[in-house]
Image 1 (tube, rainbow, N blue to C red):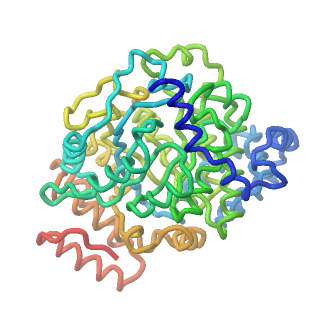
Image 2: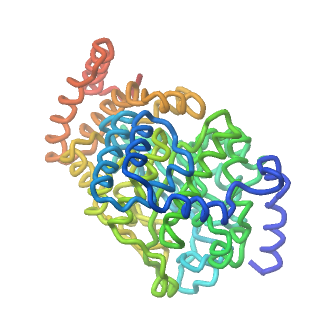
Length: 487
């Protein structure tokens, strides 16, 4: 697109007045000086204080910024082991021994932005641009369904060709594709920030969770890394999910791209974003927090000189602190990370992962990666079946459940269950049922064998006899050919 057309589109999309009601005295909820002061004020936390904070998290109470700052400054190895253990206890208390699994589906890589770390940036001439047409999209979704997927995150470049009408059209196609016993039951969306009116249209189209990641919350660094495009507008992105909630999209996902700036600062930013969403929407914060880490991308020299990269041990710490800071919120760990890292980090409190992922535009039905059509390079290339078998070996049941969303357990209803630690009461039975479907319809013999043992143990562990009776009946009906049974 010509530069003038891009600017006109950006000016038409951005409506700064829609953010004003959420500010305090004209200021947004991220003030650089405040975060830095909080981190300085908690430089040497005492052991007893850290243990009090851990105990609070175990009661499923969200932490205050001062408390998270103290955890971020903890250097005691003994306390870190206690925090790692607490992260697992919290996750099990709220979500049970299950991991929700999904696949990312990149639909377009046309983009007007100039994010210096991204393979999709508009100046990258080595990136092969592509937007799926209806036939290509149907082929991609059919390929995913035939692997066993039930949930997708649809990803779009930030470009006028990927406006709300195109996104709504692709949602309609995704939900319409059937293949054998399979179908897509939940489509989340990762796309450009939108106006409230456009977000209402997206809500009407049947969107699941709406994701917008701030990347980094540090204003100066943000502006330096996003010099042009719609993404250059810091506050338009910062309040994207407030506008989504106002528009009726009551499940939203936040995240930061760790490695762009000081990780402690961005952990604080995610906490403050969660607090501000809860403040304005009756205690309902983000449905999920994602923790992507910066990865290599084609023809992206920024990555070679980046000084904010974080090592694996630091990554484990930031995941743990977020788990403790917002104990009732789901946490997503993506296939950016190698399999061995994911296996170490999942027990720290992760609730969702993608698996069998291919992030090349059109890559699923072609069954091959193509770095010229990828935003970055994946770390975990296991198939869905391999990932499920590994999760089962770790004692986790893979859930493809979407019942909560279709029964209206979203937003305030979901958050109420999560804050009381009751999500697993319904979600674990439904996880068992969707796992059974996968084992019967798609699993390899080895995965089926380990999976059936896991189902037996989880069925026996269900605490409510009536629920156990219903689940047993439903399992028999699934064996007989029925599908999509849920509580």
